[in-house]
Image (cartoon, rainbow, N blue to C red; front, side):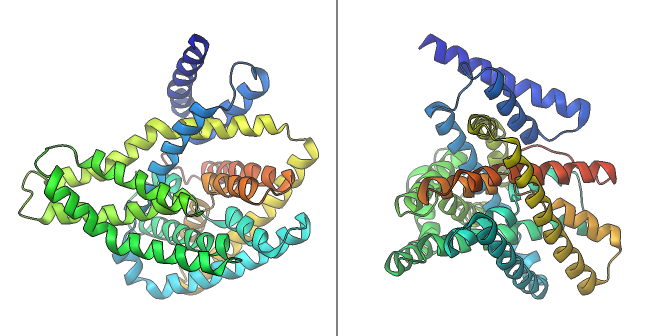
Length: 389
């Protein structure tokens, strides 16, 4: 027991000091450092640092919080104002998804369903990570980056829900019905619970929403849909709930500032728990003991996929808006990271479909590669961005 506590304390100290020191010196985003720490410590100190249930639970809390925060960041008005562009973007994304799914099926010899799920892992932007990098920006570029990231993630989550149940139409219908109920009923449940029980307890709004989000996440997990779907939906609903209680005269103690603090609280909460998730990913990569050929193949395929994604986004924006090349380039490079969406898809394919290790490993490598290359290109071309969780 003492060894477990000592290892946890050591992990805690490493994760909360080293990434910040590295960021201060080299501007490297926290998740990249945390993953690399997991890889290095997993390789050189495997008896001390290993992936266990403790890291798994804390990491799960971290990723639930990240997806709740992603749901809260949706700017529906901006997407509605530019709905024609986003409809075109949806069609473009479907085309790219089909191309990459075909490539996955060819190179990894997988079935149609597995190929499309894997393609989601190769294409879906990691919205929370991308949001963290544009906090210091403002104006149209920030709105477009955020809009493309969240639109891509919404589409990926919806398609993931479909693909996971595509061979079981009855279960698919049940899953869609439950998701529909979560969207329509959850706001009323939140309102009634808060109004009747929690509204008189000042300062409990964040914990109330967090518990409801966790319950929502595990409802979808029990239905065979990944918990990120429930967490994301809870985030979408919670944003509406926060806006309601801020505007309602019945809750005068909940001001506009309080509402903003609740939403930002999920970002800060993720900062506390997400490092364990990224560290555990690094440990899993180290534990996989990837051969050089697998890393080389995954990297080359990953670069090809990134070029396809970048080219399709760049030419779409250039044709649609005829905007300056640098602006298009900045937006495109900023939405390339897939990071934990790749990791989540890898875990789903490994646990649900028992895919060959090479595909699982390729997604892990690609998630890190897409983030590293995006960061490196931005540094080289001066599109620097603040990074955090």
